Image 1 (cartoon, helix red, strand yellow):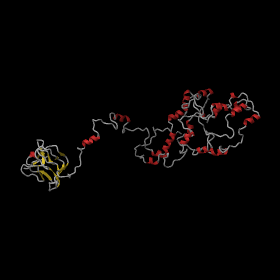
Image 2: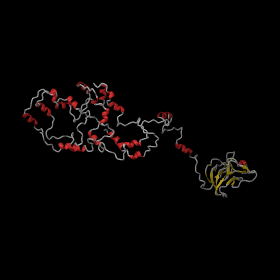
Image 3: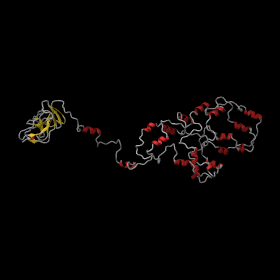
Image 4: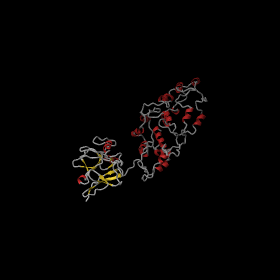
Length: 496
């Protein structure tokens, strides 16, 4: 199993109950969990991949020979000539040196007893004892208890019995096999170790094997449904017994087919893990067939929980925009974070401009005598001598003049309260309508009562004018004995 697959399995195993219990599985509005169109990750073969890798009855038309296309498809992904096998495998030269072929057998001269005795010097005899660096037969039997031997299948890195039989000369193939010649025995024993030799680090010691096998499953362990059972593989795959006529390849056909393909023992590049890297990666991982506790959902619990949720590939109805509709709608619209040029105000520029225009809370208690809280104007000049706290009106000459309730022209129109004194031509500060005004000399008798223009010289009073043809105009209300809310009414009444 690749490390990426192990990491995926680990992440799935780490999904706790609490992470799924918090989801509202029922209120989503879906009517059922449909398996149609959902996509599996790369732990599973797709139908196309299974079809490409498996022979079905419909694929078999003529079982006499493989077609060129069938051979090309079958050999896809196999390594080409030139890769090197490690020393776990015999090279062609080593096999040739160790094996009897028909061409090797010319003269079967015999060894004499003396020659055999001399040749076997230094070689161990039957019954010799190995030291504790090696397993005894009983130790191996005990260690391998529960491990499968007979009947397991090797992959195509190894020759089958039939392939070895086809490639190797055995006693039955040799016409006369009375004895080995001296030269043949010398050649056969070349490279073999003598009694008491030590193995190098290409081999596991007893301790290393014991340590490596800790946590690995023995014969009879059960795989989960990520794997095919033998029955499932048998049902999906065509074997020799299923094929009525299975003519064999000739030696020439096999030689031709295998041209350019790797032999046993080739070395993989860094795209593959070494035995050491796999051992290191698997440290701490669970063995085959382990059982998860209640922190994890079972397959049945997940199936039950997902009822009503949509799977990958479901289609939305017309309550939702499609990607094309959204793309079309957004044509010409700016994306998040775009910058406007100087034709537009920034937020800070707008805030600065509007600071004097936005509604404000006004304190109804001015802090000092002859002061006001609210709108004021200090740029218009007096048209005559004016004293602070006079009521004034804006004359047709564009200057401030004192009000007079005896004359409509001096009482109607735009009026204000002078906050400062000034002579003719002096700019004075006035309180505009909407201001709270304070004058410590005032002594209003009715708080909340109306205040009128009354008399000449810009005077005001809580008593309305009562003479014939006097102008009656309310200019505000008292809020305290020495304060008022200045807010002149726009209409006037002429006293009869």
